[in-house]
Image (cartoon, rainbow over all chains, first blue to last red; front, side, top):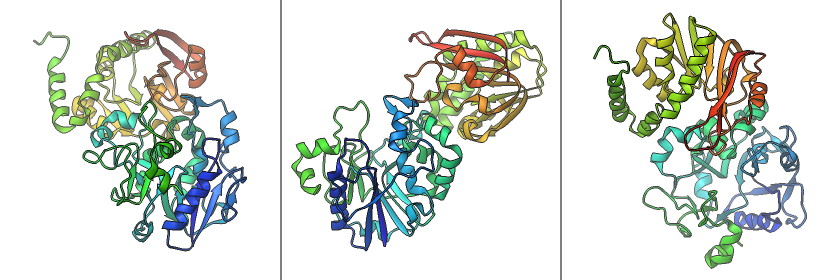
Amino acid sequence: MIHVLCSRWGETYGPIYVNRLFNMVKKHLPFEFKFHCQTQDAQGIDERISILPFLRDLPESTPDEMFVSDNWRNNKPRLWDRPKLNYFKPNGWGLDGLRIALDLDMIIHNDMSPIVNMFNKPMVGRSWWHNRDHEARPDWKRRNGAYTNGGFYIWKDNQLENIWHDCLKNYEKIYHIYTGGTDNFISQRHLELFDFVPSSMYYSFNRGCEWPHDLDKHIIRKDKIMCAFNTDPGDATNLELHDAIKIYDEVKELWQ
Amino acid sequence: MSKCAIPFWRYSTMIMHVNEEYPHRINDFAKSFSKNQVLAKSWLVEHLYMITGTANNITILGSWYGTVIVPLLLNYYSNIKTIRLIDYDEEALSIARFMFGSDIVTQKADVSFDCEEIESDIIINTSCEHMWHMKDIKLNGLCALQSNDFLQESSHVNCVHSLEEFIDQTGLQKIDYQGEIQFDDYHDNKRFMLIGRQ
């Protein structure tokens, strides 16, 4: 049994995004699985999806607590996606075994079994589209730049418990320093725990697939498995999933 | 040439070394001795020396390459036994070792997460804006600390807006000097400095 996890908070992504993600997993994950959503609002979510409460082990980690805290930067709470850290609690919500975590703004459009079958060590999406020369520069690290794309994680049992224990011990510092989000935190403090989902399986709608030769934007790459809709602040050409489905019929057809 | 006050040749050697061994760092290294960096470090060492003219050992937190501050300290403090550079950036420390040889020792550590207590005659941190509050580290020694309000830079995760806020963030109890200067020639921001003890 694989436990598939996602999280929903705020108004940008309504319950339909949870249901559509469930549908795509159902279509493309040919293994026994249970689909869960961490949320405080179950209204509109498919009854086959198990609802998980936001855990409270980490202070100020529920969306409500996070948004009323005064520790913001660039119009967002610092470490704005911190509810995702709950995934890494050992046996969190009483779950164990193989787990997959997905962001709501992912599109899955091919069989996921190649990823599951290659699982050996925890894997996360890699921002293969980043300019590797830029990543190598010291200011990338100084800005706590990310190398990963956390739209997809896969791990087993308590393999990622070090992340959780780090959060329990250092949550105040981690929230404050990694203003960009969990990708920045994971990339800078726990990268060694992960292998990366190969670029043959994973890409970005807004950034392309792999630097330097395969960076065309706004293309569905039919031979790959998952597409992330990550956006960069200040890049007006970036489309979030809810915008892309209005403009690109192909995206709308896949997001069902 | 023996009377030349500035060792240009050392910087020539260093630029060639960085360009050869660490080409991805050449801009970063050049920025480490920009006018702005020289101004900030000179401001610190000149005021520090007025408060204490002797020190056996000096620790620099978040040292980067130490490009400007190490030569200044060596020039002002003739009897230093140890200058310890602490930074999480091993390549920067490696370049510092090449540049300063036995004048320094280095320690790879993330100041925000790995340092609980520092014991040194003088403790310098000119990049408090990059890291967690200094008040959470037990600093046993005379501290010379700088920060700024240049929030536009994304790596500045812990800026302060005033000297009062900086005092609170560092936990300094006895202040020997506090001051502010313009951050640089291009922005209407401030750089803050405190010298004192926790």
